Image: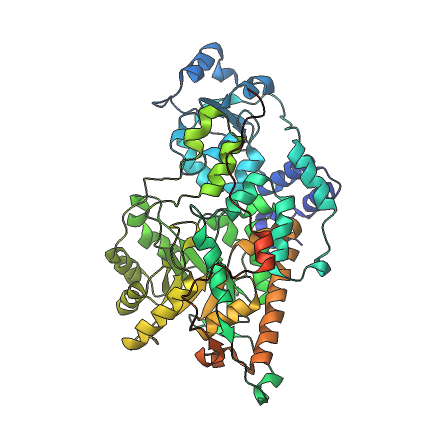
Length: 555
């Protein structure tokens, strides 16, 4: 269902008729009219940009095009647009305007594959699946304006898109979904292959992404019986002083609109209804200001942020002071694990399988050399800028947790970025046990809250992490997979499933309150003994294997 807060927003106060048309179009199997109509609601204003000057690096092919075309006429036909569809000569249309992005492809961090998917076509809908207006404003100075599109460009459905339409008509009912892993298997069939691989990829050989989950398989329960506390099970807890109904949160991730047209608004609405903490990502498809226009003041959210360049480090105080004025924001989490982008090989293999030979070098590059150098002095600067709690996301060793606690950082997320950064990083559950022991040794365990993400698929996983000392647990990919098939209803279903499993596990353990969970309820002595024979049938079935390069069908 459409977020109620979203519909109450001033800009979309009269958007309901458009939404109903969009929903009818989607269910009737006409995603083109659906996406076009909905884009009129989300981006109702036409935006006109000044003509950019030629930038260094424009290709010879592009220059020839400008020689024969008069951009001042403002008439670029669809047939002309479609001619410029390669990595060395790339045009796209956005909001009725045609741009040459050939030079920009050399600079765009990690986005070359997504842009080439829409080369030579109207990219408006797919562009706004990933980027917000604010991001486009930053990009546009690197685009070369060619002219106005002279006619509507209707992109024909591919064979894959038609297959997805058919699978969405045959979705299992939500009543047939019994586990988080069910959503991952469904997402394989209702997402484009490139999108699913982008979500599912880990780093290199993906040992870490698998171990993130398998670590939970090495911890077993020690239930107690005949205890009165199980009559009334209370799953509520506090996160950095904020009362929440469940001990897990929706973590921050980019690309929500690739799964569903409403993207982050599905997460916002479902988490608000359930009083679950939402970690709001910096890389939102709506833009921060526009997103928060539709967030109720009494919602509980954290703001996640990472630094793409040195200027953002310099401007961090301004950002923090701006965001702390949002009544829903109860704290900040800053990524500290982005010295570079991990070798996300599964994603690269999929892109290479779909690409022309001339595009391969750029498509499979997973490096981004513009990330600034962060140090503990950067963290000191952030701590001085706000009175709201500050957390660090991406800590992977106990010693760094101790330093954070000594400096006054209020929380850390023990995380390896979902196994997407450095392969063979230890699973966060192992780091949790190490960090908790080190904090106790230094008498710092009451100075900082420990959170954990990566590999969680059951309520039992959450209970195990809480017993080992975590304050809460974050989930990311499962919510993307749920949105892919079911939108907000899928997000709510995951929350409901996990809530039921947590309550059931607590009763069977003999525990009535979250704060009473401790190490006495688990046997974790085998946590660090990585047994390759450990398996989880549902998880293994849903896991997408790496694949070898394919031979050409013909010479």
